[in-house]
Length: 330
Ligand SMILES: [Zn+2]
Image (cartoon, rainbow, N blue to C red):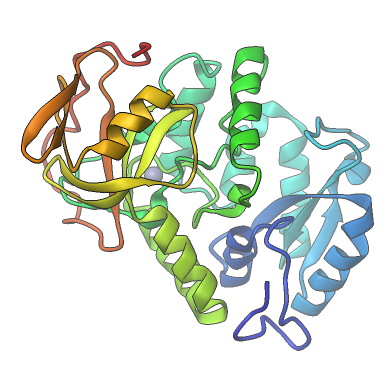
């Protein structure tokens, strides 16, 4: 990707992944003391040269600790990047043992509240609610949700390791979206504890401003992809919608990227309707004022991501859970 404003002398072009622009922006703005990235052997010289120019330490953590990690793509190795050499080494030592998960996450710059929620999810071994639903149920804001916290198709650290079904579904999702570079399509690289988490919003604003300053066209594309209402059934079944949502109602003009594992029948219904009303007990689909479909079992939640965020977090109850059976087959 070409940058409108170089990151440093001689850095006017970067790759979108390894590290993601989000992670790089996090480290360069100080939002993240350290970040980590997978790197193929052939790309190592390029990564090292980038770090030299940006005055970042670049530690091959597996070599440093003599510990190999599991890699989705064979041959890749993990590097830790950060401004301060001591902090990078501290991160490496924390990464070595799972008991230091929280410490590791904190050096990566994740807010404490979000780490707390993530640890709860880890304790379910991925068998409980997906992280997106956990964040949604913790959200108190009733208005639009800031697109910068949209993590729906960020599957990083969200796969249920040891669950072959989960892996299969993820691979199918990748296959469906092969043409798009979705692993980097997020503003924050962590999973927020709520879609109005003040700490995450603060950090997301800094990262996104950096993206806008250095790559305005890319930032606009990211906003375009993420600032959308989403009907969310579960981790792999959801629909990003063309249109706007307010107070549980979406004026729907069609379905947008990415293609999830939602059934063809549901995609067809969404594509045909002009209005969707989503409540805790059912989701109703209308065309020309006429109700033509009602989802009562397996009710989706509506996540109203938009370019402008809603009212700041106030007192009040969290989002209510749908009464219908979630995750059912429609
Ligand atoms: Zn949080």
